[in-house]
Length: 98
Image 1 (cartoon, one colour):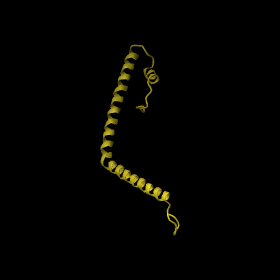
Image 2: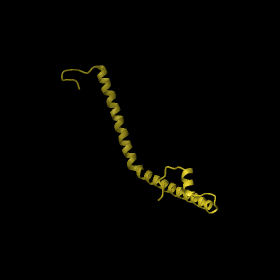
Image 3: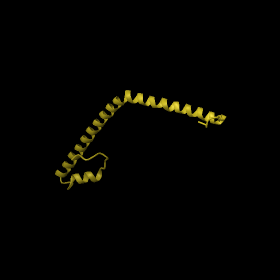
Image 4: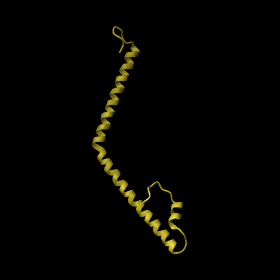
């Protein structure tokens, strides 16, 4: 705001008008995001949790099949230490199951 007794120039008035429009749009976006979060966040979280559980199951089955394969090789005398061969061949970002 200008000091009392001064008028805004046309540029200043246009700038303030644009600022107010942008502020209103940001407020609308904020309320829309809050509404989406309230309505859809629980469903999305539940869905993602379901996917996470399925992925963990697939990872466990994959790891157990690799273990079984390496165990069969070890029994046949083809490898000396099957688990160390496995850990050297395959690198994942999944945490180890200990």
